[in-house]
Amino acid sequence: MATREYELPDAEFEVMKVLWDAGPASVRQVLSHLEERGRRLAYTTVQTFLTRLEQKGFVRSDRSGTAFRFRALVSRERVSRSRLRSLLEQLYDGAAGPLVLQLVKSERLTPAEVQELHKLIDDLDKPEKTTE
Image 1 (cartoon, rainbow, N blue to C red):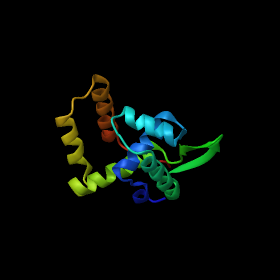
Image 2 (image 1 turned 45 degrees about the horizontal axis):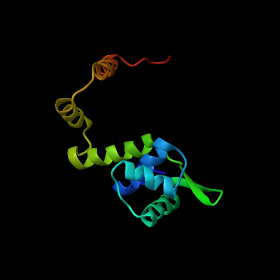
Image 3 (image 1 turned 90 degrees about the vertical axis):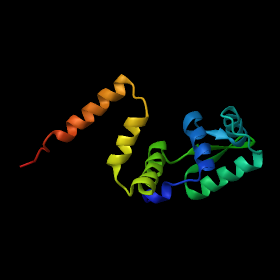
Image 4 (image 1 turned 180 degrees about the vertical axis):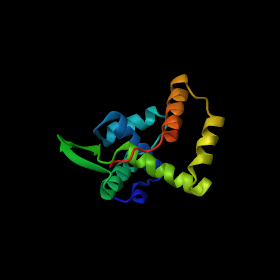
């Protein structure tokens, strides 16, 4: 799948988040997790989302007793990277610098995150090793 193919509508992304967090789940279990997160949807709506996700290759279903259980086939990282890339294109014409600066200015970072950011910047300043 190309990066663009990992893009999902928000509602389907919410269903995927349940599967990433909870692991394989039935329609009813996904519905329950969504309700815990404040999303009230009909059973048939969640079933439709899961069917679409399966058709797109994001999830796979296996029969477990009387119910189907769905599990994620695509990682959260891949889908998140695709969503971030789209946002980057939309807001900053693909330039990562302004996005990073905006995030650092507007969001509070933990000391560990600041340290990790410093390390990333230091690594950028190091000359690349060449193999001879």
